[in-house]
Length: 110
Image (cartoon, rainbow, N blue to C red; front, side, top):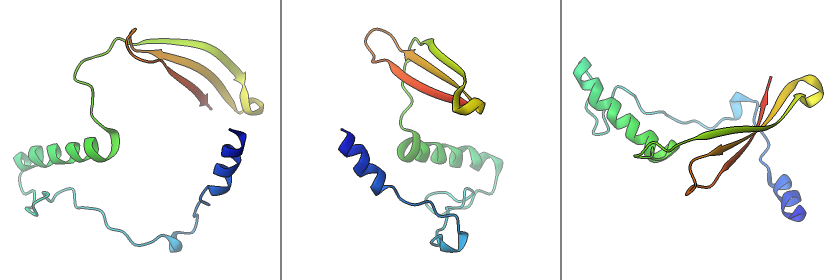
């Protein structure tokens, strides 16, 4: 496992802080429908908004669950002096009922 972590650290991509090195790209116009029509009225926006939300569901966030899951939050560790006093560290467990796995979070707050 340690070997995998070391290998992954060497494979990390260096961040680019120089805007001149960013390749050109274009963003779609939020006021243009997927089929090329322009949003010209407020009523058009409701339809275009639905398209945009569908794109976010498909390409970014995934599908929202149909049913509301019960959620229990348990904080089981806190360090108010994390990172030499620069942050507060919290360890949290999210539980979504007996049939779902727990989610363990490690949170750093300023």
